[in-house]
Image 1: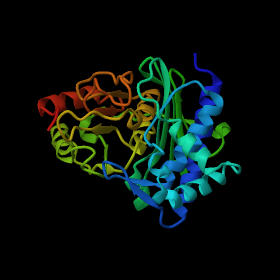
Image 2: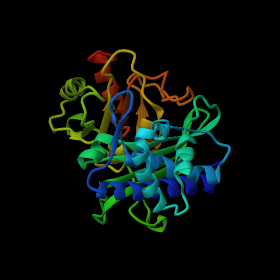
Image 3: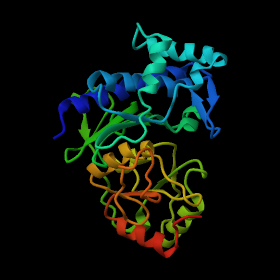
Amino acid sequence: MISSNELRAALEAVSAAAKLTRAVRAAASPDTLQKGDRSPVTVADYGSQAVVCRTIDRYFPNVPIIAEESASALRKPENLSVLERVTGFVEDLVPDATPSDVTKWIDRGGAKDPSGEFWTLDPIDGTKGFLRGDQYAVALALIRDGKPVVAALACPALKHPTDGSIGTILWATAGGGCFQTSGSLERAQPVRVTRTKETALACMSESVESGHSSHDSSARVAALLGITSRPRRMDSQAKYAVVARGEADIYMRLPVRPSYDEWIWDHAAGALVVTEAGGMVTDIFGLELDFSHGAKLLKNTGVVATNGHLHAAVLDALAREEISAV
């Protein structure tokens, strides 16, 4: 049974993170560090993770969190100025926050291999999109027995389809449907995937970065399906959001190199949002995503999210093109 506290905590957490990330983006030139894989890490990544983990810890102090960032770099003397900036943005939401608090909250997301029940967080999914002024997301999900059961997906730069405002939050609970709001929960509206059944009429969404998903493989699949419209490219799990709310029919995350395992925080929230909106999410072989193996989807290869009606056709096209790894 899903408790109301779980959903309340998730929504409170991503709402605070969305507010912080918008403030950082408005500050003109976010500070960045370099992680081991050379991807940019911004003040917003750290601040977002700090406020989300603080919120979850207040509600559920004993439930582990697997999150993307670590505060180890912020503790280095040469990065003191970055830590001070992160703390400043966190203080706008938590006035008594200290640098010590901030690093502690960030590292609250350092669980490695929890079992049973845990949260997973991507504090800014689509960091490059954030930096260039495009789409990004704050993605939080509660995993229970290997499956997402609560998801909150904040897309601060995604236009709300009804009122035209910029910024929206999609949320879902297992068996409870998917909803969207640009403001209060009282004004939340249910969202549904499209009813498109003809592959040639389908709209695809895909990553901006070809290093994240093979554009060549996607193009081959699209050609086989008879899709002629140009793909809607955007960063982050905003791609899941547009499938869930009927603005795209297909999203594929296709392997870019052999033996690559997806990170769970890149897919947990989006997968539940699409599923509860009436769609379907599997790996490229049609297997259900298994979130029970720590921080990575070790038992899955790639990801396919569709409106459900087109899923079998997409999987068939992937098999016919022999797309499994490159």
